[in-house]
Length: 132
Image 1: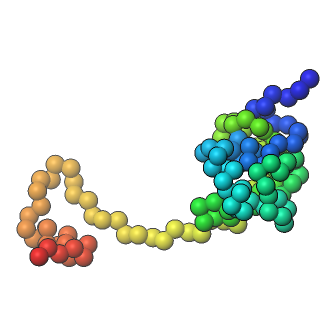
Image 2 (image 1 turned 45 degrees about the vertical axis):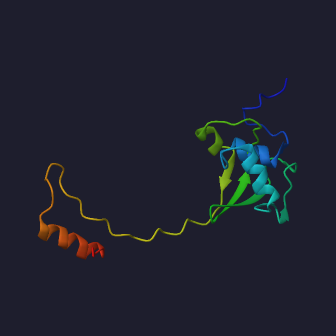
Image 3 (image 1 turned 120 degrees about the vertical axis):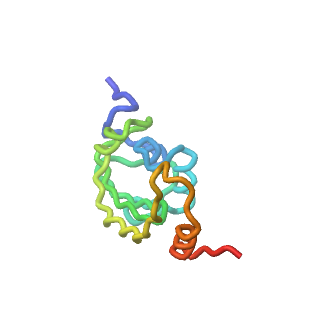
């Protein structure tokens, strides 16, 4: 009796298919492209798209200027839901850097009408925009 492709198992799976099925990439082609570009390491070696992964392996993925260090818990060869995908790996990644704080622009109340000339000048002074 074999396991279904969308159920976690211990069978070997291609790294590009595993990355796609656990929702690290939107498409399998995108996952393959990232692996070919050298953005994925299995252990300390650069992976190939056809490299098999099994539970217990540690992989490193660079995506969107972030580094993800993962330990594989289970393999799936077909795309699964987000909740099930979370059970397929343990994330050992460093925490994401904090986003810089950006001041929010003041908002006018809905229905407040058009700003007066003084209010418009104050808004332009605050935002650094000046006409003319």
